[in-house]
Length: 163
Image (cartoon, rainbow, N blue to C red; front, side):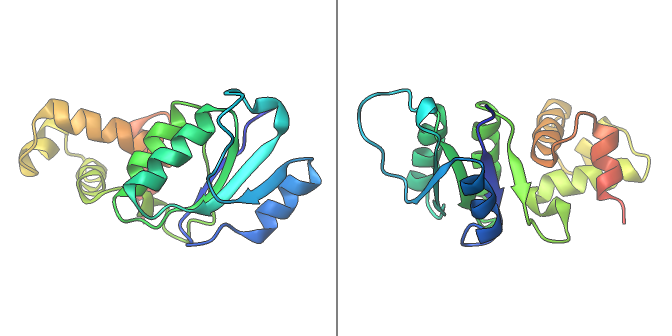
């Protein structure tokens, strides 16, 4: 059984995704409240839905996923989505749902700038220098970009960034 971890850029989770989960035997419930016991809730096939709009809700969503409860959540790109995606990817595979026409919307400005520089043929070191970053910081930001985009290589990320 694969735990559904779905994130969308919309304020509310998409109803069609919730209908699909319900048809597959998941029990979808609005909100992030869970009983204190038992800790492992995997066998209950619960999915919590809602909107992540502050740091406390990000922490609650990650804790819910760690306890074996699926998520279908809306998280506008206000800087929290990248942190949320990084944390959730430590737990399982995250599916980005209906993120609009721009796959780069999940990236921050530095990540987009690095990919744009690499797309022109610049090396990571040259791109890092142009952005006033260390090469190590640039490498870390590229790794985060690959995770956010769901790709394995920087070349794949660069290809997604090209028009």
